Length: 326
Image (cartoon, rainbow, N blue to C red; front, side, top):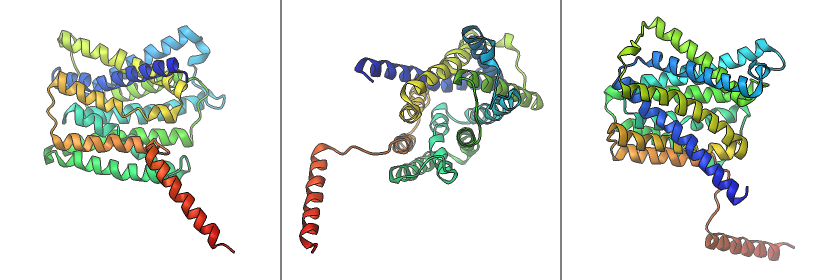
């Protein structure tokens, strides 16, 4: 990338992760202040966002683009988007909303975005990706960070903490399943639209089974603003910008910036909602951010003086071995 392209790419990533992070305080406000039920809120959020994305694809690219296909088959395509929608939208976001009913948005966001750690735990045995030393260190550091975050909360918060981790693991399972077993023929925008739509419909079905309901006429102007923000910038905007970033920077490099989303979520939750996380949370969060960086990094470039020192030592060792050989 040229300097200009890199600046454009970084701006794109910042916007995408800010929008991702903003979904946490917006969702927490609607759950805690407007008292929207968790599955009802998540269902309407993703049904609306999915319809917007698919309508955009229809207008921009034509009707054939929005037809889900896998290996040329519409039936298999519907199966793929249903599996992904149930794992990444229904399960992950359903668990997340259950979590944010019980704990602060800041801690929920940090635990939810531990999904790269769980992906790496499953990717090596499945042969999807290789475990190396930095990743192993990253996993250990990340698990320590999660344990530290869990330890700073009382027993009454345990269900909320576990729901956040279950959401992260659902997202990770979706990543592993799609990487190893599922194939989709259409562009990422089409997949995102169907995923949100189908996952949202299932969430609304769960909401009906739980007898969740809400009279939308009773929502305040602040609540309406947060709901629209959750649907448009935080869902449609973040998905769209993230897929564009993936296309420009590639999955490995782009995903290494995903830790910015919980960072922005925590900062916005402190400023907008008055969350007051303690030192233990910040220490645990820092370990989790470090672990995500390590998991997404293949090598660490040492400072130049240290590289020179190591190079001289290797040269000296090689010279001694040469003298010792017959």
